[in-house]
Figure: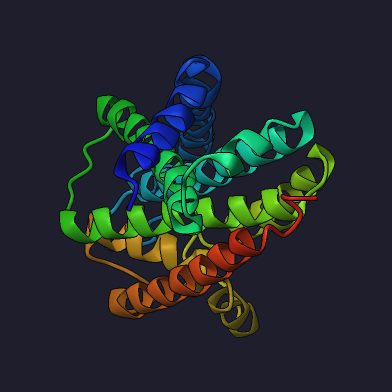
Length: 253
């Protein structure tokens, strides 16, 4: 393992989003808080999803995971497609880094960015709400699994895409619908049986449900099932991504 090279790529990717902090960290925090304020104002006192958990508190874990999903995907996909369009991807490929090291450098930076945004949402929400954490270890596990999964998805989208429009298509027509239909704003038990079954086919549902369990100790499915699904999805996508990097698919031509 070329630790120095891996660290160099990782710090390059981290600096890429920290130099525009207001756009990459602050703006997603503000967007998530707007969802929180609007929905909590509209439904506070009218809806209680879990016993003893007011709706504004119920929203916070879902919004935190939503920011992890969106920012992890955006970080890797935007970095790779920008390098491809501008032509400087050749300097990354010429570096003495293995395909696994390339993968770890890109996804590691996506992990940092997405968790920073998620922590920002939590800290600001604490000013207005009392939000206890029932299972902090599971919270960290699901946060990391979600960031790695979507960082890998973003890397796959960046490898496949030839222009920014194609990455935007994946984000707008795949990532966003799966996120909003995964239980960010509701419990799937409030849905008809057919829609509950469809929700269980959505991998993002297991991320949000397990992450919410880390806060409240309540979930719609077993958190261990959610962990197993997410570990399996991460392993499968990681293998696919490293194989594509090793073949140079759409990168070397």
